[in-house]
Image (cartoon, rainbow, N blue to C red; front, top):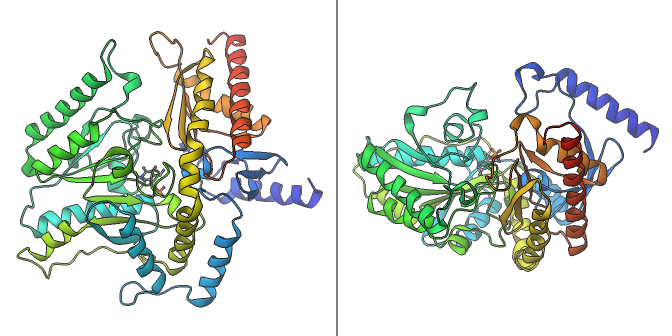
Length: 462
Ligand code: PMP
């Protein structure tokens, strides 16, 4: 790496440690943490501050779907900035957001025909939750306030969206609106009770859902919010028929079904939206973000059904205000980038993703031959390697061994960025990944996990 480059990175690392508060820091390192720096990217690769070329295994945060350094997106970003860089969505509108709303409505299932744009995933979920509250208040159903969510789910970092998050580790030290939630079990087939079939496990989850509705009363429940596949929870694919059964209960009890497709929408599962295409359900609201611009601009949103809007219009308060909006709602640059991104998905990448998916899983699944690996699971271009202490009992490996971080460290030395999740590693590469690059990814992971096994044995941990 050139010397000047090196010095630039050193300075940036020092500046970050001195002044930058990074997301999700521990109390001892708030504003004082030097994380690895990335300098540039191209396609599925990123280059880091140590001069290494790494495959971007997690696609940033499940988002760089068309890959890095896409010229068409970069051009549109500049063109739109030179045309109209911003307009207030309070009292004006712009062409890119109107066209994008129409095209998204065209892809959304059922009668989901209306789009509200936000700045990302948290604000998309927050907007959907506040919309659900508004919808019920306007209809005179002010009691319907509770939100059903699940262990293992992740929905964001704003107050209400974060309240729905299911990871215990992230809940210990923060405050939440817990009085608003009903928390149900994680639909993780790998952790189902011993000897239970997947079908029985599904039925048990559905019974739990129905029982919660009975216990709390449908008149007190506004919505169910769920990721079609729990992403940050470890790529949890629920049993077949689970969402369909929950959808039926929701419909019966006037509980809104909100699908959080922040990760699964815009190509990750080979479709613009996954709810209907992969799980055969039509939600009342779908939230999206990330892949909508492939990470080139912060944008998210929600798609709302005709039925909900008709409910509002038919209420006794058609003049009531949905007092909710963001300075950057419908941002013209974000929406222009999203339009070009959608062109790329429609023209080639959705089909390509569906085509390459079986090979990706074939190579990932083969990692199960390693003793440390309890399960490799996933769907579309999403996979998770879950490490266990014991393959018979599925006992998770001691969490403080940070086995995911260890695997990531080894893989980075070998040319692959991994997303470590305590005892799991998540893989969700840019959708443009080739067979050869999948081979590299799988080979490096195999070696990284093997080296980790050797270290753990050497340290007497495993
Ligand atoms: N919902 C889901 C399913 C997510 O995975 C995330 C982010 N990982 C969010 C919401 C929050 O999105 P953002 O970080 O863009 O606010």
